[in-house]
Length: 169
Image (cartoon, rainbow, N blue to C red; front, top):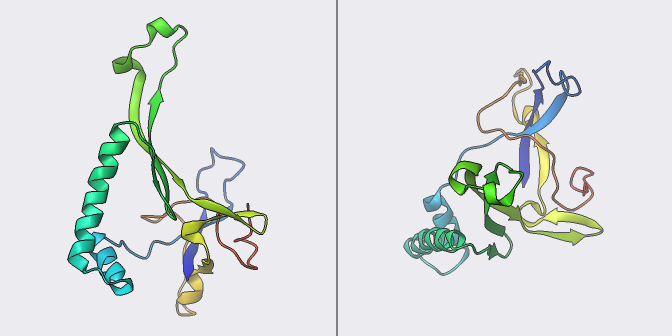
């Protein structure tokens, strides 16, 4: 399985260390929803699609409840979800006012990873490799840089095998 990437050039001259440099960004190929997941799961086991949908919808509700109670939710092979807060610091503990100093609540997700041949591998990326979007298009097609909807930057910390990108820690 390949994660398709496209090249993107940093356009912001206010970032002199990265301005004008080219980076790989994953190219989103679409969105897979709960019904799509349920159909794919049904193909892999004896559970009917409707039952899978019911379980997945229940899972999100139960996860929401447990996270709001302050629990960390761990899903083997997927990762851990927990509540997080962004807050403004105060000099004295007595001056802290939650309504004033807590700026937002968030969900913190830590993907499951294991060590494989001395390198950490994210389970959701195990076995994946990368492929340039340009290599999938007709030869006379040009893939231009710039931002595209749904892209997210960053490096690759997963995979296994001989691809040097996959072997990064």
